[in-house]
Length: 315
Length: 271
Image (cartoon, rainbow over all chains, first blue to last red; front, side, top):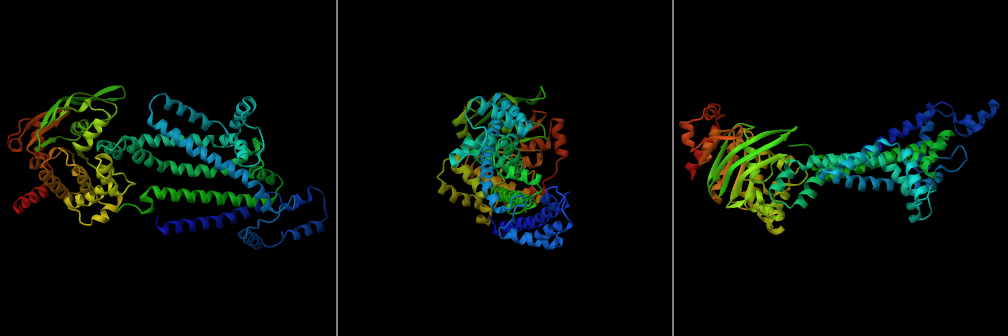
């Protein structure tokens, strides 16, 4: 893959991060309420105390100075202190991040493996299997995440007792065991979409001239399937998979809340309620960065599959 | 060699059986070039496709197609695959659709020789270059490493012809091989196809809407209309004394491939 292609995408990502960090910072100050109101927690205080608080948190500096101070700190990995409990935001995140990352990773694996596998089966079979997959994907897409979480819990945790109801576990195996149901609940709508898109793409590629002509040239069916039908149908699928995996990070908070997991999502919900600016800003920036990085990876994957993307358009 | 007897085909379109072919019979002897001429929708492409068993999934086919006595429609699995790989090769209308857009040209040729015909990979790679030379491509390595979207239709159709003649099949099925190309390359590609066919002594079933073009490369011509063969004969006979009114219409509406004709004469003189 040409290096220039990678460099260009990286530069675009950095641009997006700079612009969005500014927007994140600005949006927090455009929101109603102010941090000092939170700090005094509704008590009536003298203007002098308020002024002292504002000074302590540098709230009186001009906007751009504050933004610059925050931005340069973030670049050094310093997200500041939580307003509510004075803890380092970086430490808070570091404690919560493994749970959320494992959750998202498990969900992503489910989406890619199950979504594509079901889509391929649905695309290749015409009978009952295909009908079941279409029905399942409709249901999976229509059921809201929190509801899916409740159903899964009541069947597999309460009913069958196969999985724990809450908590995120200790150690790798235990963690995966604890996070399987939450990941499934989180993955379900995206899994349904990916299965559906894969099915359609496979059906289209099955009747594409190059697949038909490969069969007509005597290429063995299993090679036609892998090299012509599945490989080419992964083009639209990879785009959809990327967008959905990136979206998982933002959607994780509903599942974390439902399964009482101490991940980034729960932290975000609490921080928003307390107007804990530093934490919300840090999480927002991490979400944007994760979204950007996943999309970058998808772009690179797409370019590696499709020469028309990496080598430019026709003639 | 190829014997098509009473081939009929219907396709189900929204619960209605639409007849596509009606009692089509034609023969191609070894080394012979036979034309199948008609306007689009007359069923000529479907005739070709049913010889390779790549008719649409919702088609019902009856009749008998034999290739050197072998009933094509009784072939299944490995036997069908081997027939497609070694006995019959097809050149379709749009080369940009025939090659997989995400694989380089070299893979197309190697796939046909190695995966389909069982030629060892290294040998197939060497042969790919020779074949491109044979179809008049000059910058061979460049073309082998290119992706389909980087090459012109004429260049790609030569690649497809190279792939088709690689296994020296008994029969070439050419489905409007020059229609999607621009006029100047049409004549070149047609000349290359005709030359390769004669050199290797392959038979050809040539489908076109251009009666004049068919007349210049075919020994005998079948005129097709609405899924039926309405007239057959040698080119001179069809040209000078067309019997069926449709043949006359085709003669008069011909888009005169003058380029091709003059090119051909020059070549004959050169030989």
